Image 1 (cartoon, chains in turn green, orange):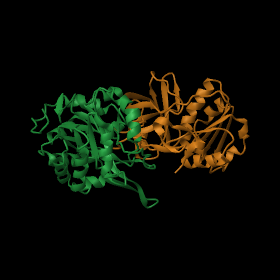
Image 2: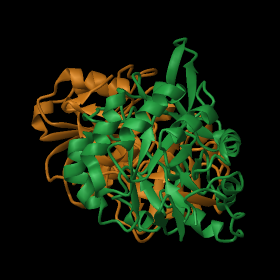
Image 3: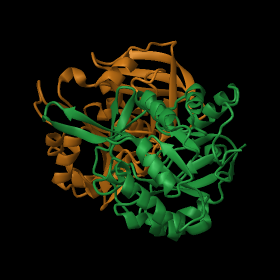
Length: 285
Length: 245
C-alpha cells in the first residue's frame, strides 16, 4: 500500500492510458494493479485516425490511434458504471483540442473517479494536445482551469517532444497540479521507401524509449510532487529503476501489447526489490 | 495469459511456407480465430505475430505461415522440440452455417480457410474451394482440399492456368451458393468486393496487430461507417460493409 496525493493505492504499478481500454476485459489484472488510467476521453466522441495505426520499430512501436473514444457523455453513462465495480483506483485521462475542453470534461465526470490525468502531450492529434504541453503558460492555464472544477488529484501527463518537461512541470505544479506522469510517447516516423512517403507518423513507445524516460523522470525529481514514471517498462527491474530515478509509482504501457497480464508479472518481480529510498515528496506517506 | 508450448512438428510446404504444430488440448478454437505468437523473448521484434488456426484436431494445432518479414523469418527458424510462446485464441470465431458454401482463397489466405473447410467437413456441410496462387509451387495442401471439398479449382497467375482466383469465379455459377468466405491479399478482397456477388461474402481480414485482444485499438478497419477492431470485432467481416482505404 502506498499513499500519494491523499489517495491510497494497493501497489505502485499502474496501467498507463491507452493500452488497456477501460480495464473491463482483463478484470483479474485490473483488480490487482494500483490504478488504471483510462483511454483518453474527449468532450465529443472521436473516431480515431485512419489506418495504419501501428507499426513496429526496433524495440518498440509507433502508434497513431488518435484518441479514439466514445466521448465524455457515453463514457459517464455506459462505461464508468462498469469501471466503478473494479477494485482499483480509476484515473481518467482527459484530452482536449481546446483549453476549455479539459475543465469541461473534469466537471462532467465530477467526483465519480479517483482522479484525473490531463493529457497535454499526445502526439497523435493535430489540434491541441501536444501543443499545450509544450508551452508552460498554456499548460498552466489548462491545469489552473481544471483545478477550479475538482478537488480530486490532478496529474499532468508530459513528454519531452521539443520542450523541456521540467519547465512545463514547474508551471503545472504552480497552477495546482498534484502530480506529474511522464513520459508520453515520443514523436516518431517510419518511411515507406517504395512510395517515398511517410508510412506512419505518431508516438514511439516501448523499451526503445526507456533510457530517455528514465532520464526525464530523474530530471524532474525533487519538485515536491509525486511522479508516475513510464516509458518502456517491461520487467520489475525496469520498474525499480524508475523508482530509483525518483518516481513514486510506475505505469505499464507497451508491455501490455505483448501480454495483457504483464503488469501482474511486474508487480511480482518488483516485490523482490527493497523499498525505494524514502521519498521526500509532499503527499507520499 | 502466455502459454509456453513445445513445437511438436515443423514442416516446409514450399520454399517460403512452413507449418508449426503445437499441442494445446484445452481449447476449442473456431474458424477465423488466431493466436498471437511471440517471435522473440528479447524485445526485438517487439510485437507478437497474429497467426490463424489452419487445423485443429485432437489437441494438435497447426499454424501455416509464410515468410514475409523479419518476424516470420525468425519463426521459420524454429524447429520441432523448441519452445514457443503463444497467446490466444483471439478474435471472434465464425459460426459455421449449414449452407452451401464457396471458399475463396488467395495465396497464404488459404490457411484460415483450411480450418473452416475442416470444420465444414466435420459437420457434413457441402462446399467448393477456389484457390489461387502466383506460382504453381505455392499451392499447398492440394490433395487434402481435393479430399474434403465437393469441387476444387486451383489456379495460378503464372504457369499453366494464367488466371487469378477471381477469374476462376467466372467458371462458377455463383448464385448456386448460399454464402462465400474469402481470405487473401487486400487487393484480392478489394477486387472481389467490386464484383458485387449476389450472395453474402465474408472476408477474413488481416493487418499488423498491436495487442491482438481488443485493448489498444491499433488495428482499425472502417466497417459500415465506423472503425472496428480487426482483432476483437473481427477478423471476419461481411465484405460489402468494409470500406478499404
